[in-house]
Length: 232
Image 1 (cartoon, rainbow, N blue to C red):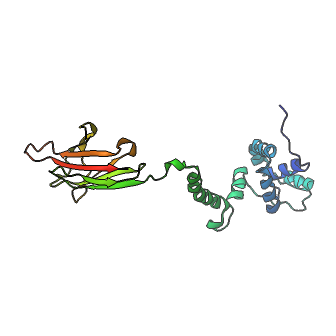
Image 2: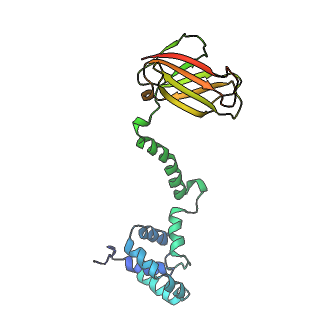
Image 3: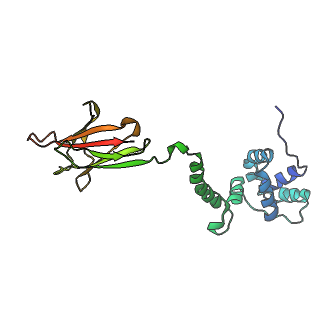
C-alpha cells in the first residue's frame, strides 16, 4: 500500500514549526486549516504531540525551526493539536456566529424537510365518511351514501355509559353474518357518544345492524340496536 504524502513541499517545515509552537498566530491558523484537509500532515502532527510538548521549552530549537521556515520572529504558544482544530470549528466569536453551532442549527432545520421528502405518498391522510346512528326498535333503516374508497366512522349515542366499563359491540349484515365483534369497547366521549372506525375494505354496501350491550347489566332492554344502509 502506497504511503500517503502531502503535496506541499513546505509542509514538512511548517509541520515541525507548528508542533513546537514556533508559528505566529496567523500562520498557525492557516496551517491548522491545512491539517483539516491533509490526512498525511494530520497523522504526522498526532504522532509528534508527546515529543513536541517536551521540546517546546527549548527556545533555541524553536528559533532554529522558525528561521528555517523564514520567520523573523517566533511567537511561542503552547497550543495542542486538538484545541487548534476545535478553534477552526468553534472560534472565539459571538456564540450565535460560531460555525459549528450554525452547522448544527442548519441540520436541525433541514432534517424535518428531508424526512418529509422521504415520506411515502401512500401514507397520506385517507378520506373518511361520518355516519351518525340513532338507536331504533322498529324496522326503519337509516340510509347513507358514501364514496367507495372511504373509511367509515360510525357515531352512536349510548345512554347511561359507565366510565371505564367495557361494552360488547357487534355488527352484522342483512344475512345475520357477523362482520365485527368487540367485547371490550369503551371509546365513548363525555357526551356518551361512541365512535368506531371501519376500514373501507371491511364493510361494503348493504343493510347492517350495530348491536351494543352492557355485559354487566343483566336487566332486560339494556341492548341498543342501530340499523343502517350503506350505498356506494
